[in-house]
Image 1 (tube, rainbow, N blue to C red):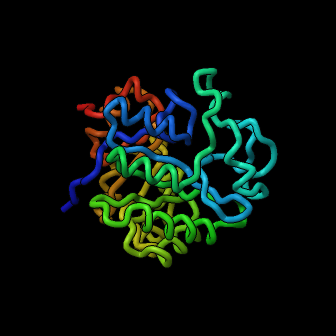
Image 2 (cartoon, one colour):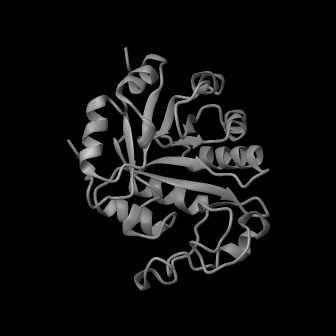
Length: 247
């Protein structure tokens, strides 16, 4: 029998989706202010191994910095403007550390899907550092975060560092072998691109004993269809179109 999903079903992608600069504290606050109970964000390591919130391996798209995240020390990242690219209202919004984001989620009562997003070659290290800090940030909190990644090596290291934290395996498509990887890593969930998902596959994932999350769903019609098929959680950029209590 499929276990009921115990967390909010609608999850703000990269924090506040299209309503705030991605992977920022402002985005997390935006989601909470709109009544969302869950957010997702990406975590990568600086050159001195401090986990920070950013999606790309390079700084140019979402900050006023230049170069690679993995080549930049934390002190060089904290002063970057991670909001001005989005709009003048967010000028001065800084690139946050994972520690800042985790503490804010706990303070606001938000459940977090923490995507381990390692720079190439740092999969194991990023998984271990992120998991260790997540365990500390959520120590004593009733609801722990879910650590997810496309990289099996990152999830393997996360399991070794914090075996008590739940893990999710990210894929683009449910191709051959997904079940074996998810089982080998003791994952509780599988996360798939909504564009490559069928109702039959959702049942297959559930029958294998996993929850299923899908990304990135940006219209209410698709969200309702996927939920009616049995998807457990939806990541969305359009917090203005898909409310947290979507029925």
